[in-house]
Image 1 (cartoon, rainbow, N blue to C red):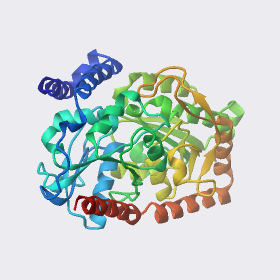
Image 2 (image 1 turned 180 degrees about the horizontal axis):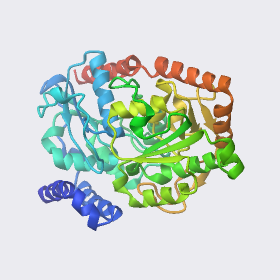
Image 3 (image 1 turned 45 degrees about the vertical axis):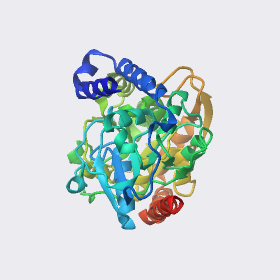
Image 4 (image 1 turned 90 degrees about the horizontal axis):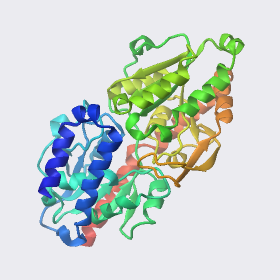
Length: 431
């Protein structure tokens, strides 16, 4: 296990160099092979069972606290939840690539290497959980109650990840969609602890010039991280819908010249192919604006508030945090009516797009050939785009209803109470 740990840590440290000479998919397969070999050797009793009284009652939050991606946001949400009800806890920053920029300093003054409490809440997905185990060391797991906070996007779970269940006493997830999937594969407790929404930092109202965007256009936004798999996020469908709605011919382009689409890709360096594909489909439209590169949370919050509509024609989502954040700041959302996002949005609070369930025709790692996901109806999305642009009353109704729902139902207190009650039951059972 020592050699595996050395390889993983060294490989991740050299990742910026390796990714330039070795394809990312091959690197991922190499790492997966090491993880699977180590996992095969791990028996359920390798970790010392939870021992009440050995550590103080409380929680050690372990995750990518400084990360600017969704995993980082998820870990910081958990910190807020424990703060909400004043549950004793510490915060340990732990980073499992691929991922990218790590500039968030919200909890810098509270980060520690010490883990004094008896419950670990580990914000590392099942796909990387063995990396966490190898990197952090067995002693972090021993004698503690170990909770994995996992997200996943399909109704089937990859077989190669099943050994990760050996490393946890229970699993928390951001949605019932994920919970219902994981319950098919384990008898251990699986608990839904929904993500909550509130800007981590004040929304500073930059004008659009800050983002090099036109201030006089009605702007739609599509945003995703290259590490999240382009085929799942499905930005091409949103581009197609936009073209259908506003750019089919020169006459339409002239009529709708005050409309634009923004494509924002984070961690674009993870997939040059993504950039190439996006570039090829937008080159004939001068009102589609491409953005890449790092943004801090303040900029992301501002961008979501500054555009007119957020569009997600995703094929699957474990939760859909950016959609929830858009609703929170009063930006209407057009979204596929399937998977985790349907737990906080409906036809009264968003523009829900119909879909067909389709089978994957090949692997899009980690999603496998033969799995199924949703394929949004592009023509319906195009209709919603035009209606939001042309019908002010409809726009204001969707924006207002979405914001009201997000602020009432995605508040921190609800999920904080779920966490507190679950910790109480864990400690009661131990007594």
